[in-house]
Length: 154
Image (tube, rainbow, N blue to C red; front, side):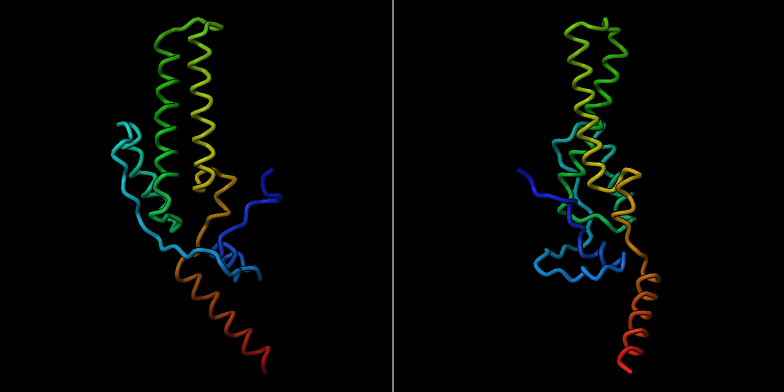
């Protein structure tokens, strides 16, 4: 049986949200970085990989450790496109075994793509959980914290 409750948010996200739980010990600290595109991706996935990396790196939510999640997203996107194109181009009769196989492949690839996209914050519902403040907002928050901390001790 899996763990109960929602997945824990990273400390950085909790700090941005102003949570008192932002100082949980024992969580690994990772630095932002751009992962390299794996050589085993197919052509469509290789073309998508740098676009996704650019989007996520601009939001400051990507690390080199995210390479396989991004690669999985891109590969499943490619597989989904391939299956959709196959069902359209082959003009397969509905209800046949071939149609079921293509439809199942498309559905599974889309489901896996959406799961990886949610982990990366590429879906509208997961996007608020991975936003990062800009440096100006971070400095303003630190100044407020310093101000209120000094007024409480006085």
